[in-house]
Image (cartoon, rainbow, N blue to C red; front, side, top):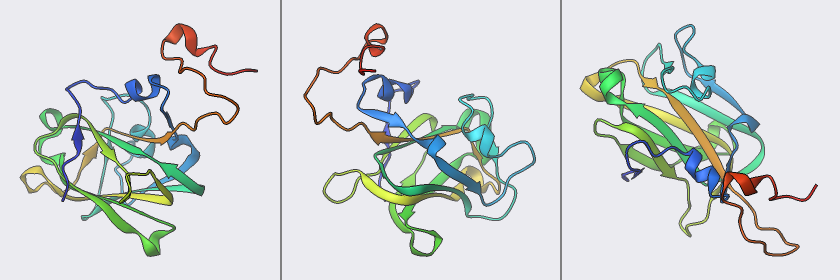
Length: 185
């Protein structure tokens, strides 16, 4: 079991994007859930609103399946959980699995969460500290706090590393004012 890379309270994954080293790729995937209550599904996991959430409606483990159309490099998975708001609905044990399809998923991280509040950053790196290449990611909620049955997840974001230009090495544009000049049109 590993402990997730905790960020300071309020550390938003958008800060990762602003560094120019990663970009969000969740919209390139097809998302599915093991179960959900009406109005509390996939759309709420990706709407950038920390007040909305996915709520499962079935037996554990509760699953979030993220399938890419082609083999994709993934570096970081960010999950937002809030124990103060969700109490027994808050995940306490999560398994992150990767593979080509449902039949060959392998666990690469298992997280123990103790009353989480904020963004949890999970590095999806292999044995050689390189980002993982996969067709599918599955997030399995194995247990909830206070032995809760259903679960809440407020946001999930997936990031891939930004590849260096092979033409030449240019300094990274890190401020918002210079971001519009970071590519040649």
